[in-house]
Image: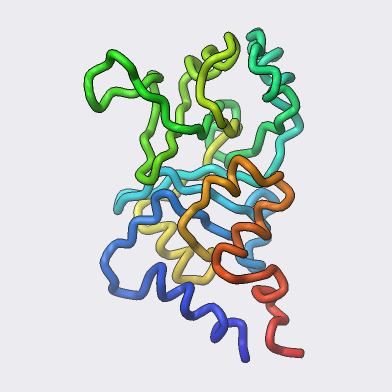
Length: 213
């Protein structure tokens, strides 16, 4: 059995030539072995925004060279949420790597009009999470409040109109509905395997040599 035969159910679930737009918001993209770029190889990307105009996401399994405590020190912020101190900051993607992106549990905006968010620059993700790129979420964490679960990344991953769909058609990615437990409860080093497991796969099954023994 060839690798292409093995993956057909997954690729056809995502996008067929001429098919209507398939929204992958709140999905994981899992890199196939053909991706050789150092940042994207063996990556898991959480898509927090997707429309016919393009897509945006965060790599959730590539640690940066800084933890949360060091990041807050660089920003000259205290860190009252001491349980976050040793959490690794991640490399979210090649776009705006100097900017922080915080994926977190939804925050109820008490006293605010319906539809407004607790922080200045927040994207509400269909499925329950939020992604904030304004400093106020970090300031909330610095004084001991803020979201219960957070993932902090530097930079994000961006696709233009039709670009992600073309990469899916070329077989660069597998996709599956995201599970927030993989994001928040699984160590970064194991997230690739766990994301594959959501599709009933293991890494050896998507190797170019699979089925050619």
